[in-house]
Length: 143
Image: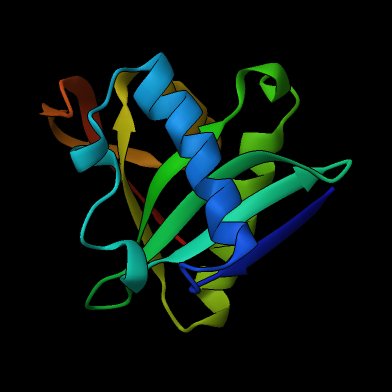
C-alpha cells in the first residue's frame, strides 16, 4: 500500500482520484458532476491510496485560514471497503496537515460516516445540514 498526493490536476494521480470520486459520489450516491467537480480542484492537495497498484481510496485537502485544512471528497471504492483504507488515508492527511503547519482538520461528514470519523477522534459540531442532497454534520479534530 502506498499513499501519494498531488496538486497537479493534469497528473495520473489526480485522474485516479477523479475515477474513484466518479464511482462513489456520482454513480453510487447520485451527486451531480457540477457539484462533485468544483472550483476548488486546483487549490486542493489530492491524495490517492494505492493497494497492489490499484487506486482504491482518495480524498483532498483544501487549505483554509487560521491553521485549518478542510478534508473533502473522502471515498473508498466498494470492493476495498472494510479494510481500514479510509483510516489510513485520513491518517496520512492529518500528518500532512501538521507538516504544513496547520493545526486543525475540519470536514463535512455524511451522516453515515459520522461514527467512522468519531472513532478517528473527530468531534461533531452544530446542526445537521444538507450537501448534495445528503445529510452531513460538521466535524473537527486538532492535529
